[in-house]
Amino acid sequence: MDDEWQEQPEDIGMPPHIEIPISVHIEAAAAQPDSLDDVLDFTHVMMQFAAQRYAALDRLRERAIREAQSVATDLGSVALRSLRLEVAAAMRVSEYVAETLLHQAEALVQRYPAVWHSLHAGRIDDDKGYVLVAGLDELGDDATALLPEALHAAETLQIGPFRRALRRLIEQHRVNTLEERHEEAVARRRVVLETGRDGMAWIGAHLPAVEAHAIHQRITAMGKAITAVDGEERTLDQARADVFGDLLVDGTTVHLPEHARGIRATVVVTVPALSLLSGTHPVGAEPASVEGIGPIPHSTARTLCGGSGEWMRVLTHPETGAVLSVGRDRYRPPKALRDVVRWRAGRCMAPGCGMPAERCEIDHSIAWEDGGRTELRNLHPLCKGHHTVKHHGGWSIRHQDDGDVLWISPTGRRYVVAPERRVPAFRPDPEPRVPVDAPF
Image (cartoon, rainbow, N blue to C red; front, top):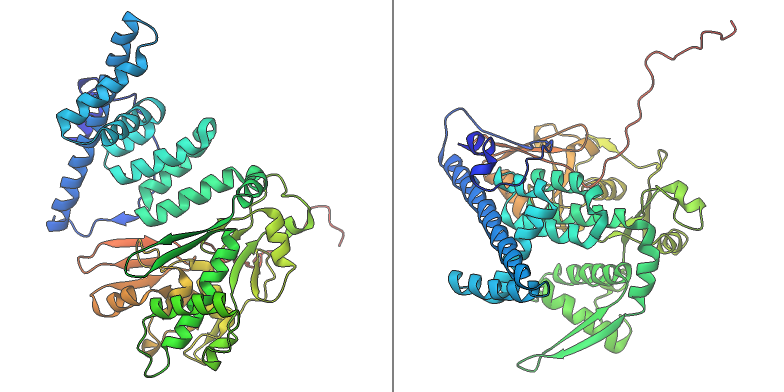
């Protein structure tokens, strides 16, 4: 049915077909369909109908504008408002929802037909379509250059990893203007207080992401140190809120348990080493980035890499000196190895999970008791919930040499999870090449 519809686009008002190569990361389990196949088939059909609804909405929009402009050239906006009202009334939704649907229809059909085709083919769902259109619209005229890579990410990743990947793509595309935009944003920094109920209130700060991330990381580490003590009844959220208030009100840590006083923020900053040699961001170079945040201004990266030891710095240079394995000598990875494992993954390595790696447990792909080694190619972070699923939920996982983790579900389906970053692998040339005219 799918192929037949795609070969006859004129029958359902489809935009011109655009071929987009994709890489499939999910494999079917077996030749015999099961209940999950039924769910996937129904989902595919729903996406086809969603795409056709957008095509129909855009035809309504174009006809309304065409008929209004045949009367007077300035009636287009009135026609759209009238159409928005009628769509809202007919669908029994708010005018805001109707306007959102009409905007999405225009974007998919007129400006990003490749995304429309992907939705109609069931390679993306409606949620990803909205995220993708919003991201592309943010770039304006530059969206065309980003579309193939962004669409590939949408088709191969779950919604959480896709959102992060799209944000990275957008920021990397705009990296040459990041410094200027960051300066304008810093000028808008502020603290906001909002009174709540029951004697409570919210306090929030709009400030540079690096500092905000460091603040949250520090109070989280302190909270974990406090809640780990036997007899402590506070939850992590409660301890974190108490630490936040105590530090700002009293300005000291003397009232905290001794084991929590010396904790400082640790922020992972990844910087292309050669870019540090330049006072401005080199044209075409990869931007510096902060774990959990994304690209940061070049000036901020240079400051961090020349600053105090409170910042953990990972330079993208072949000679990092990182500890990659301790073999069978010890079960628990040393800190240097844990840092690399978390830096490479960025997040929990379960399909679609967005838990930051720093809040995850380090798991052996091949269990220690089964002969697994404590080395980079056998380690990855898993949040507590997915760690439990891995051991007791009927799933099995295999670690690939490039850092990918293959999850095999109880039904036999395979899901490949890629890390946020790759660790360079250097191998000697097996046969050194000798120039033809080399002297002997």
